[in-house]
Image (cartoon, rainbow, N blue to C red; front, side, top):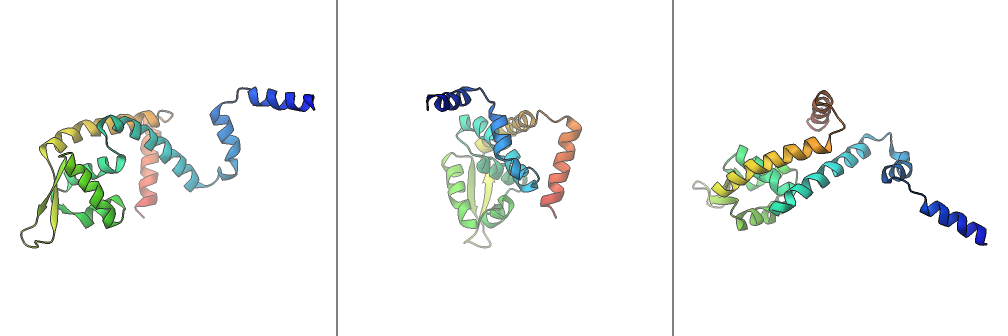
Length: 163
């Protein structure tokens, strides 16, 4: 009995890299593109989440700010569509951005029930910094790729989701 428990203890104490453990645990999924994309997305998001945390923002909020900058005055439903989320999910996201004075909803004159969304001056200033943070995060999270591979990966991913 003592011998087998020693074997177990020795095996448990043997240093094994996390990546080796993960590789052996999920090898049944190696040939699934969706799984590989999800794993890559998790790595990218964990990196970005860590960097955005100093600004108390999440990736969806950063994405919303970037979309609003590109399309000032867009409606909540259009923002939801651009973020690929349900329209009711946009409300708390915008509430948070408004509480932080990063974005504002302005009632539309033709249709008093609708609101256009705009960045505030604070939001514009912060977004410039956030774009740099996001670019650095992408670069770091994909550091195993050279520039050509990174461009090819981006091209292929766009081809998949823009179909």
